[in-house]
Image 1: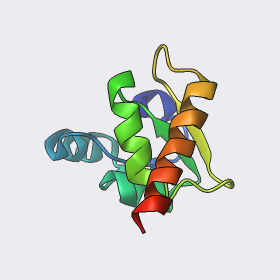
Image 2 (image 1 turned 180 degrees about the horizontal axis):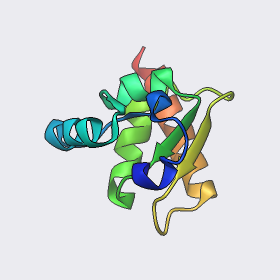
Image 3 (image 1 turned 135 degrees about the horizontal axis):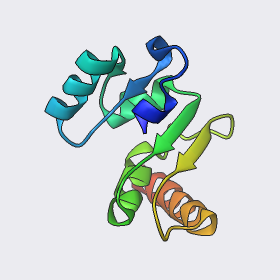
Image 4 (image 1 turned 30 degrees about the vertical axis):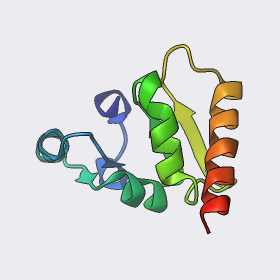
Length: 100
């Protein structure tokens, strides 16, 4: 995904990956910045969610407090509709609120 988007300036791209080694490899090869999911979501205006469908709920829960209306969330997950994304995000927000 990053390589496909790399026609512009790469200095503005920050990425996360399940494995730190792969993220660091991308940083070295492409000249991008890397961080954990929360750092990436916190510093980004556009968030590309490129995870397996089974991982979406956990990632949305992890990032629920950082996904503000002014941020654009783009999902590349197969078989996971916008309606599913919205439902997961609402559920993650409810869970986070009840935890406090």
